[in-house]
Structures are given as structure tokens and as C-alpha cells.
Length: 290
Length: 184
Ligand SMILES: Cc1cc2nc3c(=O)[nH]c(=O)nc-3n(C[C@H](O)[C@H](O)[C@H](O)COP(=O)(O)OP(=O)(O)OC[C@H]3O[C@@H](n4cnc5c(N)ncnc54)[C@H](O)[C@@H]3O)c2cc1C
Ligand code: FES
Ligand code: FES
Image (cartoon, rainbow over all chains, first blue to last red; front, side, top):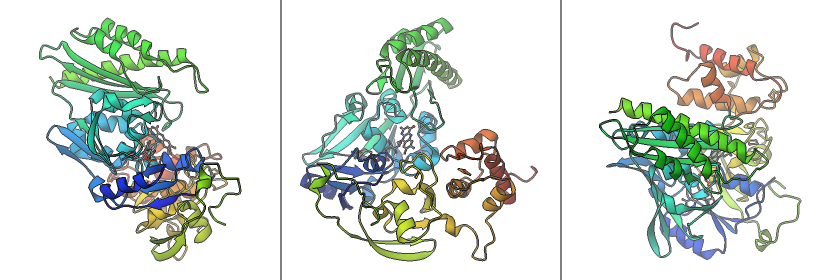
């Protein structure tokens, strides 16, 4: 199908974009368009105005600032994925982005667009939760920080106000003695996953588990931290049996009902397997960094 | 008219009474183009209906099939997931620009022909543009079976079963000397 009628604006500054938003009852920000334009084509979305962010210079690029990776609102998935400095600072980002859609979609889609869109099955919001990132949201009243844990309310629903614009997202660099892994199961390459799991395991110098941060996508109405599995791991020496127990504990976070893609029971099985696999992989990587 | 749907607009959409026109300036296959377009016109429809470049095919209009793939500023992109107005100031390359002016096929096209990488051909322009962009981006394309399948994973083909397309990509890399000096 074709998009409905709308006004199109291409502001050149964030202030102009926010002022434009305030003039319309309903407006949509256009970043990479890889979620918005399908929604327009399907007529699921019919904003009065589409505000294209492509002309706003200050929203471009991705860079490492100290121990934080700062991702501008117009930085494309593929640009972030291929950036060597970002890969060195936090290799989990490239590993996760490799599962987001296809290269051609990643050439256009943006990381911040994905975080703001808030699809419960999307990979980057799960990474965002596990790493403990944050976004800066700018609105008519000024700027505010929103921590990853405060952003997601429901599938495609965030705590962003309708007149706000995310200018950048920040993701911490990988901490010392930490291993990482993202793995998912999708029926076809590039599809949104039936379930995906992100794991960060931090070891003490002795090799015991200092802390674990685990998250998942595709299993609930938002991306979720798998705190029940994290609790099982912290303070242990991460024996195989402990890792398996964490996998079983993670199943409690699966709240997605049976749907047209699969059953809740199968998702639980997937999460259990993915949790044990990602912990095992992250652990091996953490040990290699000790 | 291009970009106008026959169906009744929804209640929300009916608030918009007029279809604005915006001036669009861009370069398509080396030619500088200036047109007035509706903001809701998709780039795929602009290329096909306004410029007559019907080599860019349209299958799904939701980003899934890949047959509308073109290059926007040197990178493969879905033309069905871009508004024409987003391409203002951009350089677009379509399948029509891939073979030489005298009709000599590009090595990727030649490889598709030699390896039977197409049957009906509906998907082929999308595959060619995707592979072309990938070969131009990657210093060392991953030519393992997995690497090639990853490269092609964003494009659907209902005819070939993909085996011959994978072979065509490998052959194209060979013809373009992208497969390393000693392999053969
Ligand atoms: C075939 C296909 C397969 C896909 N598969 C996957 C997949 O497996 N996993 C996955 O995660 N994604 C997938 N995607 C979606 C893709 O990753 C999108 O790029 C991403 O979800 C949205 O980014 P965008 O820049 O394209 O955003 P847009 O489409 O431009 O915008 C999406 C939404 O976010 C809002 N928004 C954008 N930028 C901002 C901002 N700065 N501040 C506030 N709001 C903003 C918009 O208003 C809009 O509502 C797929 C897309 C397609 C077409
Ligand atoms: S028509 Fe664009 S991806 Fe199918
Ligand atoms: S050759 Fe017919 S769809 Fe690919």
C-alpha cells in the first residue's frame, strides 16, 4: 500500500524540530524510516506531519567519550556496527547488531530509532537494558535523561512524551573482567527473534562471579532484565549446574502468551537454552580477559 | 496518479485536505533531476512512475522482499522504505546504471547469467544492487557459504532455490578479483 497524506518537514536544528512537533497534534519523527515507513505504507500510522531528522547535523555520528559510547540520533545501525573504536570499547554492540534485520535495512535504520520505537522483540532495546544505557530526550521544556530501565512501558510504547525527541543514546563501554554474548532464535535470518538473550558476566580477579546482567527480547510486552537468573549467578563460581539453574530461573520472565508465531512453552524452552548458551560464551570470554 | 491510493482515507488521515508539493533535486544514474513531488510518494514509485526506471521492482512495500533495492549515496537501501523527498540532494543508482552504455554486462550480471542465478528475473535487480553495494563496501567480502548467504539474506527469490545465486556471487567475486590471489 501507499502512505496516507501528511505534511513533510525537514528541520535543520533540534530546536526547529521540537517547535515543529508542537505545531501539530500528531507528528512522527523520521530517522531511518525502516519501521515508520512500513507503518505508513500499512496505514497503521497516519501522522499529520512527518518530521525528517536527516538535515540536523548535530544528530549525526557515533563516538567514544571516555567510558561511554555516544550514539547520535541519526547514526545508522551499520555505521555503529562497523566502527572499529566502538567495537573495541564494547564488542557486544557489533555482535547484537548483526542480528538486527539485514545489512540493507541496517544501512538505513538507526540505533536510536530502534531504541525509541521500542519493539518488544527488537535486539537493541535488550542490549540497552543489559548494558545500563540511557537516552537524552529533548522537549519544549528542556532536556532530560531517561535510564534504559525507565524507558520501556509496553510493546511499541515508551516513557517518551509525544513532543520529545531523543538526541542521543549512551551505552557504557564494556567493564573490566567482563565477558559478553548475544544470541537469538529466529525462524529466518534477519527476522525479529522469537527470543533473544544478552549476557554480560563480570568476574572477580579470583574468577568468581562478581555480577551478571542478563536481558531478553521477544518474551514479554517489553524487553526485560532477567533478574531471577542474575541472582542465581552472583557470588558463585559459575559451575555448570549453576549456569543451568540460571537458565531454568529465567523462564519465569516469559510472559508472552501463545501467539501466531509460537507457544509460550516453546519460548520458555528457548530462553532457558539461550540463557545457558550466552552465559557459557560470556564466561569463556570473561576468563580470557582476566 | 502516482502515490494516491483509491481507498477511502481513515478518520485521522482525512484531517489533511491537501496534498502538498515539494521540490526535489537529486542525481539518478548520473543525471541531475528536478521534480515536484508529493511528500508521501515512495522513492520506488518515483523511480518507476516519474522517471520510468522500471528495472527497480516492487514486491511487498514493507522491506521484506528486497526487489526494490537501489543504492542511495553508495549504500544499498530499500526504495520502498524511503520517501522520494528523503532523497533530496542524494545520489541514486539503479539497476539501469549497472551495465555499460554499450550493453556490456557488469561482472555481477555476467556471473548471474553464467551461473543461472535467475529464472523469472523479478528478484534479480534487487540481488544485483545488494551484492554490488556489498562488494563496494567490504574491503574483503566474506565469500564463505555462510558469508554469501548472510549477504543475500535480505532478498527473496521464489524461483531459483538460491543455490545458483550463491554460485553467481562466488563467480562474480572471482571475475572482479575479490576472492584473494591464490584461490581459483
Ligand atoms: C524487513 C525488516 C526487518 C526488520 N528486522 C528487525 C529485527 O530483526 N530487529 C530489529 O530490532 N529491528 C528490525 N527492523 C527494524 C529496524 O531495525 C529499524 O531500523 C528500527 O526499528 C527503527 O529505526 P529507524 O531509524 O528506521 O526508525 P524510524 O522508522 O525512522 O522511526 C521509528 C519510530 O521511532 C521514532 N523515532 C525515531 N527516531 C526518534 C528520535 N530520535 N526520538 C524519538 N523518537 C524517534 C519514530 O517517530 C517512529 O515512531 C526491521 C525492519 C524491516 C523493514
Ligand atoms: S518492495 Fe521493497 S522490500 Fe519488497
Ligand atoms: S528468479 Fe524468479 S523470483 Fe528470483
